[in-house]
Image 1 (cartoon, rainbow, N blue to C red):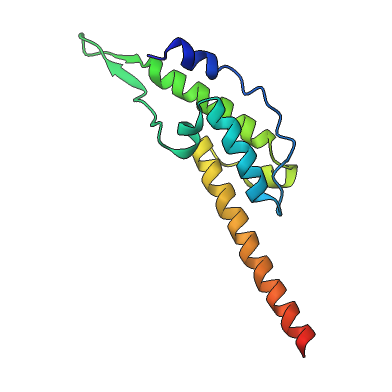
Image 2: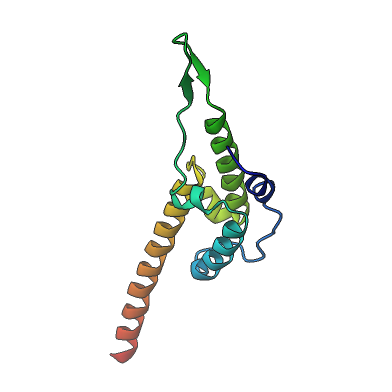
Length: 133
């Protein structure tokens, strides 16, 4: 069960990220996002350390009842997922629309940024070699 401090800290993500994720600013964006999400005590959802509860719980009469912990997890994660999407440029968010959890989006944004960085390094190396010739 969530404590009063947890529920107060997890209400809304009231902060606007003034640095929207684009193809060139992942390290800066990541720094802002982590500090805000940790401040709201939601980092476990995004980093995968707060595991999703079972959807149903068994009752004494063998029926399955909705698990309030699952519903809470889903609500917090969905709120965080939407907030993360809103902290990106349209171009970046469009590439990550398929993500269903905040952890999936976080991991794929990092991979996308890494792929862009590697291609940029390759491009700059080829430019450097062509200048030297």
